[in-house]
Image (cartoon, rainbow, N blue to C red; front, side, top):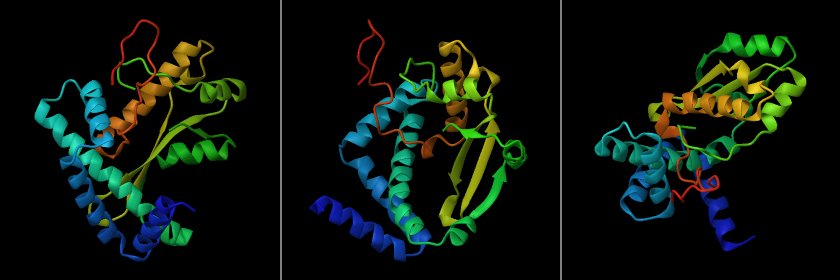
Length: 209
């Protein structure tokens, strides 16, 4: 294992034995530090939020950038806690499930495929839409919301648009991205903004990063 791998493993083990609220507090502090130091994640998060939320004032965009970096750091540190806990302990952190009836109905039908963008052309996978079209399954969106102070997590489920299985690939992929966007807008700071979502451009379009 490389030195970097040893450091990451050691950090995950360390935060795996610490209380979750403490790990999340450290993550928030680390994210605030990342916001003040020039780095790749900061640059990409700022650009993505600028592209996806043009309706926000510059100050509001910056608050979202800061909060997203805090959430990214928290996500990394909470992984260690999850890794070293039994499933029943983790499930005990679920405080509320939104759209549980949607989830249960899909399970009873023996169907259910989960699909985890903002008016900007983005290269998007087509596998999910092809599977939905082939199997005529019920597609759901599902995501977890981290509650403040390590209080636990809320789960959210919602039905995807019927257009997600449209034979027109452009229509189907658009429905997929619109569903993801609706999830992201409910809690934008907890989305992973620090990557080049719009890195590959259609022919004739200029680079965005």
